[in-house]
Length: 73
Image (cartoon, rainbow, N blue to C red; front, side, top):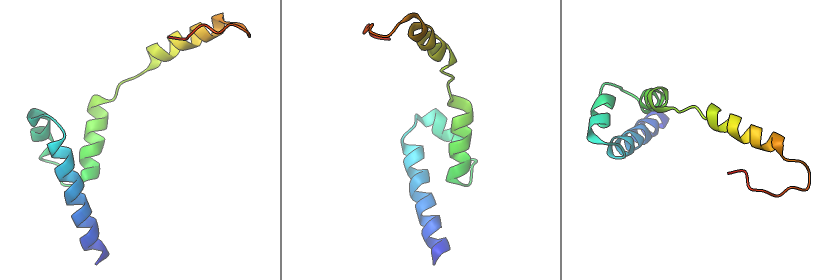
């Protein structure tokens, strides 16, 4: 019973994922048999680093002293 519910939920999420991306991206997800494999694949391909943004914000913070209220962006 629990396995059936898990399979149904996996199918629902898989359908949602395939319908939420462009067709060419969805075609690349077809070989995966589980939602977790699809999700991990998407994460590995499309993750973006925010290191440059973090560095910029940290530099701006370091320039300010207490009492200054200039925006960070």
